[in-house]
Amino acid sequence: MTELILKKTALGSYYVYTNTDVYIGVFVMDVDGYYYYWPEKEKGGCWSPWMLRDVANKLDEVNKPWDDIVQADQSI
Image 1 (cartoon, one colour):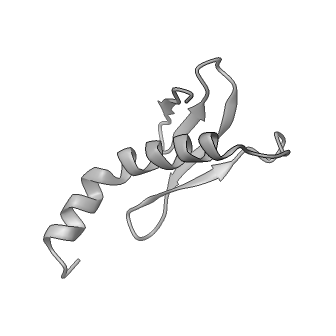
Image 2 (image 1 turned 90 degrees about the vertical axis):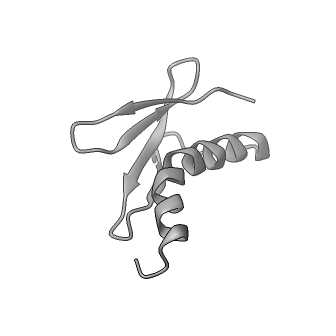
Protein backbone atom coordinates (compact mmCIF):
# COMPACT_ATOMS: atom_id res chain seq x y z
CA MET A 1 0.00 0.00 0.00
CA THR A 2 1.24 3.45 -0.93
CA GLU A 3 0.20 6.55 0.93
CA LEU A 4 -1.12 9.02 -1.61
CA ILE A 5 -0.62 12.72 -1.03
CA LEU A 6 -3.11 15.29 -2.28
CA LYS A 7 -2.21 18.89 -3.05
CA LYS A 8 -5.26 21.12 -3.49
CA THR A 9 -5.17 23.58 -6.37
CA ALA A 10 -6.54 27.11 -6.38
CA LEU A 11 -9.44 25.86 -8.53
CA GLY A 12 -10.42 23.13 -6.06
CA SER A 13 -8.96 20.12 -7.83
CA TYR A 14 -6.40 17.86 -6.16
CA TYR A 15 -3.05 16.86 -7.62
CA VAL A 16 -2.26 13.27 -6.63
CA TYR A 17 1.27 12.21 -5.68
CA THR A 18 2.79 9.02 -4.35
CA ASN A 19 4.64 9.09 -1.06
CA THR A 20 7.84 9.36 -3.11
CA ASP A 21 6.54 12.64 -4.62
CA VAL A 22 5.74 11.20 -8.06
CA TYR A 23 2.80 12.98 -9.72
CA ILE A 24 0.26 10.40 -10.94
CA GLY A 25 -2.80 12.46 -11.85
CA VAL A 26 -5.53 14.77 -10.62
CA PHE A 27 -8.94 14.57 -8.95
CA VAL A 28 -11.34 16.96 -10.69
CA MET A 29 -14.90 17.76 -9.61
CA ASP A 30 -17.50 17.11 -12.29
CA VAL A 31 -20.94 18.71 -12.69
CA ASP A 32 -22.52 16.13 -10.34
CA GLY A 33 -20.37 17.34 -7.42
CA TYR A 34 -18.21 14.21 -7.28
CA TYR A 35 -14.49 14.12 -7.95
CA TYR A 36 -13.12 11.87 -10.69
CA TYR A 37 -9.56 10.67 -11.27
CA TRP A 38 -7.68 11.71 -14.37
CA PRO A 39 -4.38 9.80 -14.60
CA GLU A 40 -1.21 11.48 -15.80
CA LYS A 41 -1.02 10.59 -19.50
CA GLU A 42 2.76 10.81 -19.64
CA LYS A 43 3.18 8.00 -17.07
CA GLY A 44 1.38 5.40 -19.19
CA GLY A 45 2.20 1.79 -18.55
CA CYS A 46 0.36 -0.63 -16.34
CA TRP A 47 -1.14 -0.21 -12.88
CA SER A 48 -1.12 -2.88 -10.19
CA PRO A 49 -4.37 -3.77 -8.39
CA TRP A 50 -3.06 -2.40 -5.07
CA MET A 51 -2.25 0.98 -6.63
CA LEU A 52 -5.67 1.20 -8.26
CA ARG A 53 -7.24 0.40 -4.86
CA ASP A 54 -5.18 3.14 -3.22
CA VAL A 55 -6.38 5.67 -5.79
CA ALA A 56 -10.00 4.49 -5.43
CA ASN A 57 -9.83 4.62 -1.63
CA LYS A 58 -8.41 8.15 -1.67
CA LEU A 59 -11.06 9.22 -4.18
CA ASP A 60 -13.78 7.76 -1.92
CA GLU A 61 -12.29 9.72 0.99
CA VAL A 62 -12.43 12.99 -0.97
CA ASN A 63 -15.97 12.29 -2.18
CA LYS A 64 -17.35 11.21 1.21
CA PRO A 65 -18.56 14.63 2.46
CA TRP A 66 -20.56 15.23 -0.71
CA ASP A 67 -21.80 11.63 -0.86
CA ASP A 68 -23.07 11.89 2.73
CA ILE A 69 -25.14 14.93 1.71
CA VAL A 70 -26.48 13.21 -1.41
CA GLN A 71 -27.38 10.03 0.47
CA ALA A 72 -29.19 12.02 3.19
CA ASP A 73 -31.23 14.07 0.70
CA GLN A 74 -32.31 12.10 -2.36
CA SER A 75 -33.83 15.26 -3.90
CA ILE A 76 -30.33 16.49 -4.80
